[in-house]
Image (cartoon, rainbow, N blue to C red; front, side):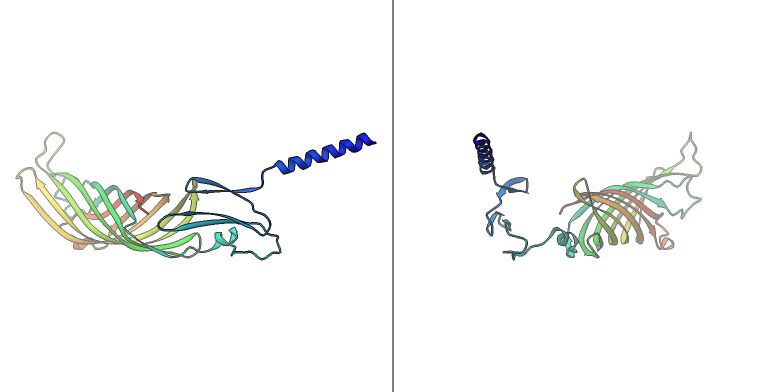
Length: 275
């Protein structure tokens, strides 16, 4: 019997020693790739760390209390944070884009050329101002102002030309400076642990286009210019800072562009968000 009591006492002693030797519970915090371990404090005590720079101070605290105790500082549950609607925000010069552009001719002079090749070129743009209004945590409405530039080229042959003989040809160059006023709906989600969204909307585009024509027979160059108003539906996706945008625009008043053979402009572009 004495041996059994001694054995039990020895076992209890070893358990107590192991419990005393264990490390206290802790909380791991990772902020800006910096890992910090905060030990859980004693009852009704608080441990905290802070990260600071010239613009802000981030303070993180750990408190131990019983479920019925009053908290020492305001608490926000994860559910509360996840359902809170983000604040509306406006950004200036926050995004740039570049891509490929195809413009479809208006066929103003169908008998003048053997064919009507599309204008093909590039487009660039920048978001001057963007205002985002959140309906809820997932859906927002975006409006703003963008500035863009499209340059494209076109090569057409005379109707008398054939595969062996080219009587004459003309080279067109189009330069389109434009302002666009976008309105779009965004659905926000997460992809590859990055913030992401899909967006659908339309741009009202106003701009001025300059067309130059060079005739290889005479060497003469002619210049034309006129204003355009384009309605441009678009769809795209953003993941992190990168995005893909597809747009197709229709000239609302093609009959006012007698010297301008462009009736619609189609773009596919890559976007990059600066902040």
